[in-house]
Amino acid sequence: MDVTNLSSEEDIRKEKVRKLKEEKVVVYAEKFDRTHTLLEAKSLNDGEKVRVCGRITFRRIMGKLSFFAIEDLCAKLQVSIGRNEVDEEKYAFFKTMIDTGDFIGVEGELYTTHTGERTVRTASFELLSKAISPLPEKFHGLTNLDQRYRERAMDLVSNDESKRVFLARSKFLAFLRKFLCDSGFMEVETPILQSAVCGASAKPFFTKHNALNKICNLRIAPETYLKQVIAGGFDRVFEVAKCFRNEGMDPSHLQEFTMVEWYASYWNFEDNIKFFTRFIREAIKTVANENMTLTFKGHEIDFSKDFERINYTQTLNKILGFNILDFTDVGEFKKKVVATKLFSMNDFEGCKTVGGVIDLVYKRKIRENIVQPTVLFNYPACLVPLARRNDKDERLIDMFQVLVCGDEMCKAYSELVDPIIQRKTLEEQSLARLQGDDEAMELDEDFLRAMEHGMPPISGLGFGVDRLMCLLTGQESVRDVVLFPLMK
Image 1 (tube, rainbow, N blue to C red):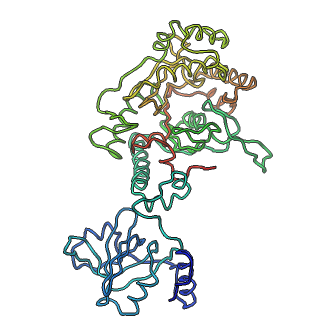
Image 2: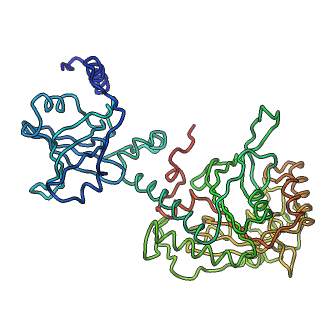
Image 3: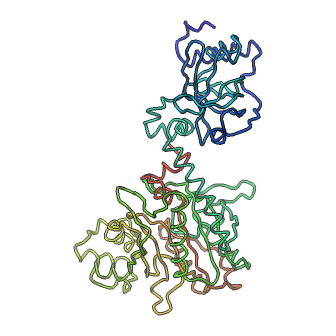
């Protein structure tokens, strides 16, 4: 085939496809019956016959004997092809019409070369799919981050680190479901299209449901629906939930993300601290490292030791020099904080509630200093309207978070199941929403009716899978652990 006048590699490959189709060669096969994956084939003895397939990632064409490598998700295998095994026409076809990037099926016999390389000696082969664009150079791969996210398929082919990360994510999700099911939890599914913005403090996405002529929001959290399932008699439930929050992007936040929430009847937040500690340690053993240490953001993180505990409210009181629980008016609270000279009034320009001011102080003065796994507990009630009030001081909630390197890995609390208090807190949220707080929750009557019929004591926990995968795989951006992050 004469391709000397064609201008580019892609043009050459397209011309090969045209020529093959003209000659009635099947360029894109229907199927291939393989006997072994490449990993399985590499473990067999010399002399065993196999039918294997994969993408060609390397070719070395010589006179009467050539070598190439095929890859699948888990392994790479060398293949030899020569004039002593296939006829002259078939060998010429391989040399002129087969390129890197093509998928090929090979039938042959396993042997080991003098350099110790496990190899299949080709008896016959089939073109399974022709690549009309060349692969990225294997050594460099896709080095531009934007290109890696937009062309994830090629990133996975050329970048072993990306392949490792997403294999780890798949392994983690399989572990997660087994761990929770073995612990008595049942997986359920709740709606993504919802009628009320509830379950977390976040700015939602909205969409129009044409058939119902109704504006719906995309789920920001599955919490209120999962609690309704508990009210319906399910003892322990969990969901792997796609959630959507119309907020800013940074290395630890995306607008579309995967959240896991679980709820256990008759637990309190201390039970969840113990359970999550066991869960995260087992996840590390399964996915990352048996010795319980991970490298994250330049730090060696040790999960084998007891997690440090920090009393959230007491620590903030000590930093500010007064009791933050004494304030309910946001203007008065801002003035009191600014009087400490730790902040200016401009720092709180976007804070519309006491809880918003408290959260900003925490992020600036506590969160950024935490490196090793740490449990924060004893939060002000104004921060989470769905959490149970403490029996000794109703201004506090029985809640905790686990932080690593300043990242919040989970949030959990003893759940509020008092319908009277819950209605009051959601009415306060609705009022705040009317006053311009676009992250406040709405009144969810279906949720409240379920609660009014009775809920057992509950503790629930939620975490972002993407952020946790950054920790488990040593990545610093959630875009590196999401296959297809949304781009401009």
